[in-house]
Length: 97
Image (cartoon, rainbow, N blue to C red; front, side, top):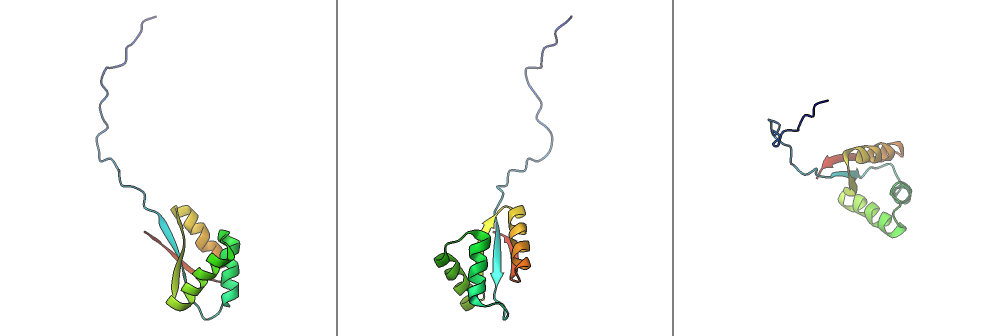
């Protein structure tokens, strides 16, 4: 049985390497005229596990400024959070940071 030696040098694949760092996605909750402030606080606590004080602060930002960035992460995770926020009746969008 003969042995075959591996080449000493390996050619680099032709083409562009994608070296861009994956930027996180951000979930934004928007103010709406329907949901009570206490309910929005509750949803933030339930979905994200935020302590009451942080959930209340984010809710107040939604109420006073019209929006708040409530979470960030991978695209899949943010899509999941947006769908859960929608299921709870909140207006939410996501964008790349």
